Length: 116
Image 1 (cartoon, helix red, strand yellow):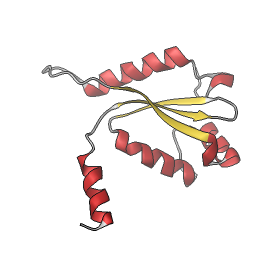
Image 2 (image 1 turned 120 degrees about the horizontal axis):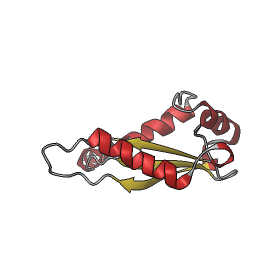
Image 3 (image 1 turned 45 degrees about the horizontal axis):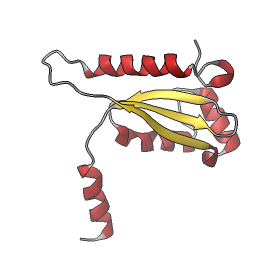
């Protein structure tokens, strides 16, 4: 199997996991908290920032352009624990998990890229 096929196969084997992530500016320690239904999409977030298309947060995009990609780190903060209940709503559970991390980290004003 050639390398490209091997990488494609490995990518497909990664389980789809939802949860909360953080983008941190290592220069000024400001953080952005976000959630995703699929952590595989984090590469898409990086791509959006690199191509000046990060619509969710203009201030983060501005500083990404100013400081460059090497000034930022992406961290998975918590994976959503899915429940095998008939009425489990992943979208609602993910929103609650993100709210928990927003409350815990307080990424507002000088501390982050969110507005209260």
